[in-house]
Image (cartoon, rainbow, N blue to C red; front, top):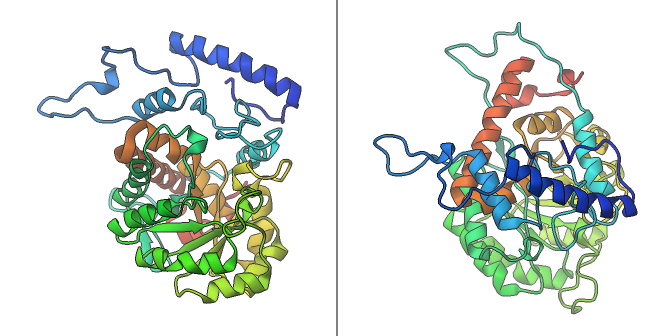
Length: 400
């Protein structure tokens, strides 16, 4: 496949490679053999769009969502079959990894290297029973341990979808699939936070709300808006500390000390999770500050070049804080087996970013529901084939 690569590419090679891949993707898409699904020709009904007898609406398929997402997002996102960060390396604004794109690519490769033990003589799946994919986090029962990663502004997607429609698709689609959505923060657009929190309230708080690491007084000032939405958890993406450099002092984000984090944790009764933890010592510092959880994350490879993949650092972090706080992780989560791998490495749940973005652009709320349900089915299948009856039994013993 054009987007499969086992090693980072140089800056010069990447510029040439992107142009070459872009040409090949367009050409091969027209031939129907590309890893990237091409948009359907106008006025042509595709086989997957055929309306079943006695129904008034075609059944949406994953192929439909990919095709529509590519049509909506190209060339910001090529909607590659394997989202490995090679084609889009260095593209920002956009969905690519920062600089050489190595951090994004490391997320993909680190997760890819994890191999699972196939076990079939276990009896965990019969006609009468199936593995249980559900989990409860901060009092919320979820159909699977995967929720939507928070997205801030839609500038990186070219503002090609109204913000309210996008966030309603993400939160509503996840809730329809039995899990939780997620919304992000734009410190420079305070009215947007209120609109997004109103959407969370519409779905009875079944979504995480992520706030940028604003100055503490400003952070505490907006907390009532978030609390009124009824969200079951608040995340602070400390990994975005350098993203708003040069903004007005009142909203300028930055790194936090343990004392500053402790003040924010104590300012609300809602569980606070720190996103952007990549080392065991900072995981322990988060616990000392009173955080209820962490997200092992390098911000999708979008804030610092040449960081390790999250799958590589997760086990050491879990060894220090597993059972003491909830451990989330993100980084190239696409399939249900990706969820399974991250849980085996020590996570309690995962955050899904780019693939739900594509689902929202390609199918709205229905597309998001379809992708989450597909992921849940894939997770269940992985549990069957490794002899795991429930989420709690996904541990490192399943790793080859």
